[in-house]
Amino acid sequence: MRKPKALVTEARSLESTRIIRQAAAYIDSHLDTGLSLEQVAKQINLSQGYFSNLFKKVQGISFQQYVMYEKMEKAKAMLIGGRQVQEIALDLGYEHRRYLGKE
Image (cartoon, rainbow, N blue to C red):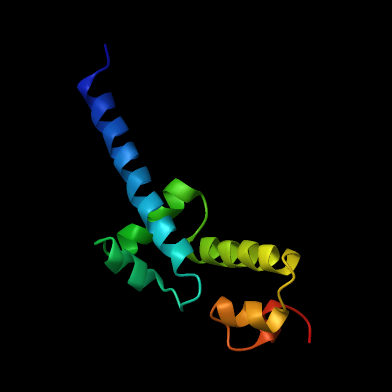
C-alpha cells in the first residue's frame, strides 16, 4: 500500500504533465503566431513564472527552446514536402525567409 504522501506527489506529477500537454497542444496549433510565454501561461491560467518553471520541469527544455524546436520540425517537414522557404517562413510567423537559413 502506498503512503498518502506518495499518492499526493504522484497526483501532482500527473496534473503537471496534463497541464503541460495542454500547453504544448496550444503551442503546436499556434506556431504561426508570435507565441509568448505570457500568452500561453494566460491561456492555461498560470502565472508566467510558475508556468516557465513547470514547463521546463516537465519537458526538460525551456518554453522558448520548445517553440523553436517545434517550428524547425514543422519547417523541416514542409521542406521535405516541397514547400518554398519563403512560404514556410510566412506560415511559421516569420516576416523574412532569412530567419530560416542563408540568403
